[in-house]
Image 1 (cartoon, one colour):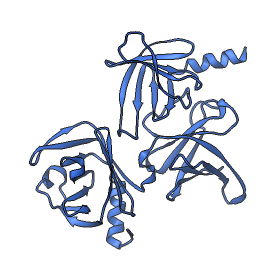
Image 2 (cartoon, helix red, strand yellow; image 1 turned 180 degrees about the horizontal axis):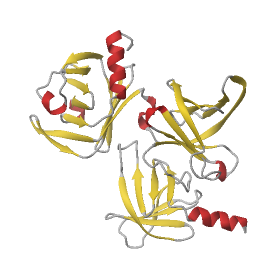
Image 3 (spheres, helix red, strand yellow; image 1 turned 90 degrees about the vertical axis):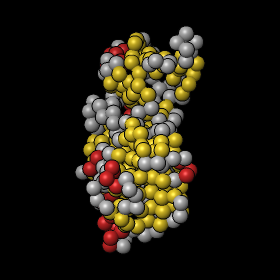
Image 4 (cartoon, one colour; image 1 turned 60 degrees about the vertical axis):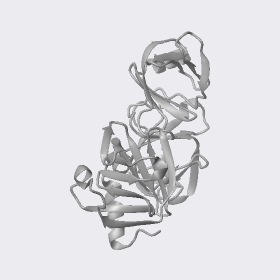
Length: 322
């Protein structure tokens, strides 16, 4: 009887996070959003739930229908033509019947003690992290403050624990007690949905535009991302594609573009030189990319200035080491 009550209470939840191999779905009432961060920044697609039964949520948009499981052991199915011909499309990693912060970056784990102990971390702005364990508690299970990071882990702390959250799926979560090295535990990593996690500097833009002719840009509301490290690695993502590049130098410079009035009121920019013909100019909140590998000149608009100011400061005092 207890098992039945527990399952019914889960079904009644209005939110859910369903991670699969390659992406995840977020439920908010009857509205569903799909994300595939490795392929595209921002939303991949949206759906409307039109029915459900004991085992699946059924959602649809103009292109197709999907059957999303209520239990992690079941697969995700697609009806491409909306004709009743269902086929498996994704391998489900888990199902969390709670996701009250749908706009975060997810790091999912399994602590090895059964389905109710599986959970996830969400990276928020301002160095705040939230841990959710929906099988054990509604709402935030624990809150952490990021105190550091290295090339493999984010380091976060609460009054109870210090957690190393992996930046790649080949590593697992490491948990210790603050100020005490004698205790050590951890979680098995199930999924990480943050392609930029391995980069110390990452700019997520709300809009991007592509030059159609000369400096005539067509701006749209599709997101984009520019990520970099101090080892000359640069990644640019937009329109569902990502480009891995190597840059030769990074420096503070005056804008080299007549487009300055369109994207920034300041003349200073971070100039990232890929080679003599290809470069990226980062401004606070915007960027201009001139790179043949992307095919066209691309403008990015609407980013947070935190990483920009950090790089500027390091370049000014000479601590940005390549």
